[in-house]
Every structure is written in C-alpha cells, then in structure tokens.
Length: 384
Image (cartoon, rainbow, N blue to C red; front, side, top):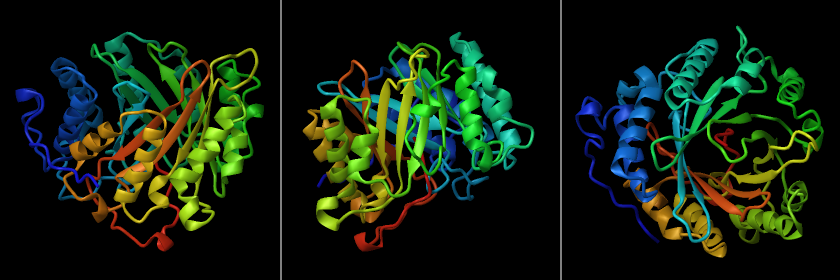
C-alpha cells in the first residue's frame, strides 16, 4: 500500500496570494491544486493562472478560517468543502486535471448563490472570450427568483496547457421543485435543440444535474445525469446501450470491480449514469458514463484506492499518478478515513477510447472515519 506523504506547504504562486494561509479554505485548496497541476504536467505559468482562478471563484470564502464550520452546507462534497478535484485517465497519457467549485458557496440564500455563480461564469466568458448563449437560454428555468434545493450552480474547469480551461456548468433540474424536474429537463433540452433526448434516457430515480460545455470543446456536450438507487451490474451494462457490445460488458465488469460484488455480495448503493448529447438530429446519446460512489462500498480509502488501481491497470492507465494525486491532497494514511476517493467513473464517448475519471475530495473540514464494510451505507449524492 502506498501511503501519501505531505508535500511542502508553500505559497504556490508567490506574493499574489501570500495572504492566503493553509489555515484558510483558499490557502488549503490552492496549495492542493498547485501540487495536482504538477502531476498533470502543467507549467508554472498555467499553475499560477489556475490557482488564482480557483481562489477568485471562491470569493469571500477563500479567506475563511478552517477553524470555523462551512459558511453554508453544500451538496458538492460530504464534508461541505465547495471544491473537488478529478483526474481523467487515458492509456499511455498524463491524466487531465479538473476542479469543480461552487462560486456562490458563501451565501446561505440559494437564489443569491445562483446569481453569484452566474456572475462568475460571465466573468470567465469575458476573460476567455467564449459565449454563454446556451446558458442564457436556460437562466429562467434553472435560476428562478425562488429556487428549490439542493444547489444552484457549480462550475468545473478542465485545466489545459496554455492557461485557457474548458468550462462546464452544472445546473439543478429541481430548481422549480422536485415534481417539476422532468418537465424542466425536457424543456431545457428542447430549447437547446435536443428535442428527442429526454426520451432516450433510461428509467431513473432522479435527475440531479444538467451540465453544459462552454468555451472551446471539440464537440460541446449537453449532459444529463440519472441516479439509480438499486442499480445492478446487468442494468449498468444495459443502460450503456449506445456503446458497442464490448462497452456494455465493460460497464458491467467495472460495476462489479468497484462495488466489490465478488467480496460482499450484491450491493445496492446509489450510482449515477450520465448521457452526453452532441447531435441534435437523432436524439441518440454520443456518450455514456457510469459513476460509481466507491466510498459507499468500502471501509476505508486504502480499499477504494486498490479497487481503482486495478481498473486503471486493467485499461493500461498510469495508476502511479493516482497515488501521487492522493499524496498531493492529504498526508493522512488512506486507512484512516473514507471519502478521499469519492467516485470512480468509466466513460465511453463515440470515436474515443474508454477513459476512467477519479474524483478526489479536498477534505478541508472533516475526514470521514473508517468503518466496517458491513456498515457501509449510501452517502448523500456528491459530485458528477
């Protein structure tokens, strides 16, 4: 077992963020991000840019002391840290780094939270010269004056060389009430030109997120997430029906490997599927992702790491980069907590090799204690 070691806690970008200390939310997460940028082989200039963007996206929360509780609860992570990291692995390649943030996290008012997030996205659009036209089409649907929970707007940045990230926005289909989420999703997809997309979705217990790619993407996607409270491996394979036959087999195998069915029987934890739409003519998804909440199936992060590494090695990906990433985020022993590795996802996209994405928690406020595997239970839904 690899035990993470602590990297030096230094100011990652020099005097521009010297006021942020490791005892503050912004200081902790920017230190973590700077070390993760090194693993993703981003140069110092890009690292400085992305660290500054993350700090700015947190607004007043960046200087909030970690001795205080979170200013408002967030669905984004189990301990209410408004930041999460993910690494997208491909065979023979350096993993791509992403960071997810809730720009309005400081506000306890959901409407103001959404407005703050929208201002942050528009500031990014002005800085990096991309259009928010698709988001503007949906503003009244997802950011009403009196929104329902559980969140308003999240922003994910795919941190690319050159200092210009890919931007993704996550919106809440239940903003007009949980009984309206299907109607809200259907109308959103219609406005975006995907008139047949909703009917392509599988049976689901909920639709927690709609996501949009903004800025420079080879094929900008609209993504719909579905939760399944009692998903099985057979269903996971069947729901990936857009993939070729081997893709369906891969989804079922991935489910069993991450859930540990061979060790503990058939688990029934909440899992997510995600459908990407790029073609407005056919209504057929161009991508399928199976998101497995690995933290709900294991007693501690050592087991989560081992299951994830087996899948990375199975697909010829750099498992060592995962160990380096975990060491970049925390100095604790993996066996001393659960939730550092939150989700593991298998991604199929038309015309591309499968990839695996690993979601890593910042754990700014709390480390969930380890537990007996028999006591593992469904966690609240965290991130996509």
